[in-house]
Length: 345
Ligand code: CP3
Image (cartoon, rainbow, N blue to C red; front, side, top):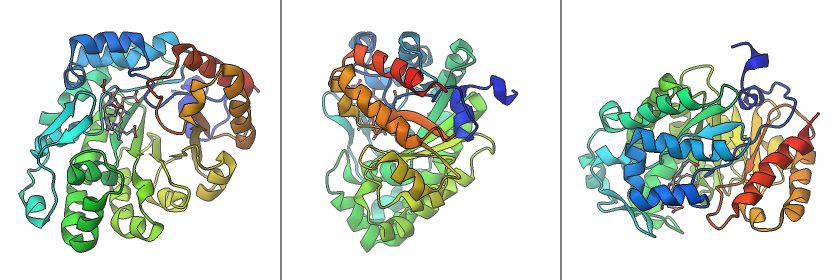
């Protein structure tokens, strides 16, 4: 497709100029939307993910309401763990639980290989259904968890604050740690390429919890594996590499790879962009909590973020992390319209 006809999000990811700044939101499909909650009354979260028609419907819900520049596939970073045999469950009100966490060398040695095609093929079907239904100007973003963040669930057994089991394995049994991340990296690359082959036009790698690591540990225990994933992806498809708490990690994340680096709200966008270098794009970075305030209040913050981007090609507007479920739907509507209005050039 000639660049002038391609979705704004893809042009911005390639650092080409766009008439307005493209915008999408992490967790734009989810519990703040009444139509999502209605679907959840009839299906469990995993059933929604596994049913391509239902998952496609949820993917499209925010795109029908708001003038978004991208849809993000409805799925989860932990789906890829089902075939590992660790007992993944999305428990009501508790988030994800892994019933048989991988804590030591023997646990890593016992892991089953991940056969991506047979275990998460339904995700590729969702991508095909969504792409057929989506207007040409709206890009479809595929995604996966980065090896560290997915490993943190495998080792902790769920969400964590201090990542003590993860860090103990990493420090005490580095051979097993690297083996675990190799298994995840290989499966993740296959998984993302499957999404791309099915029609995903860009992919985001979520390393949401990487901010728990110091730069030297990131370099030693994580960077090589994230780089393996990114290097294995089909060329020409933009990769967005996102994490939170990353102020000291940004240059290393950039070294690991990605055409666009996702910034959380703790770093000023211009400082973050300088840290990763202006030869990559940036995505972000409104504090998702700002959407709980009145639109007149967060409008000033949107202006400030756009001012820090300075009209430079390569900025994709997003929140610094996912939409909170308490967010009023009208505020999301106002935000998406406001980004286009305030960035028009
Ligand atoms: O709209 C979108 O962004 C696409 C769908 C999406 C989900 N999860 C759906 C979901 C995406 C991109 C994810 C990624 C994901 N999943 C991440 C990385 C992004 C981030 O938020 O940091 C992580 C860490 C997970 C793991 C996960 N899945 C957690 C921690 C939870 C529970 C937290 C919560 O909000 O309840 C989930 C469940 C989950 N994934 C829900 C959704 C809509 C809520 C399920 C429900 O109860 O309906």
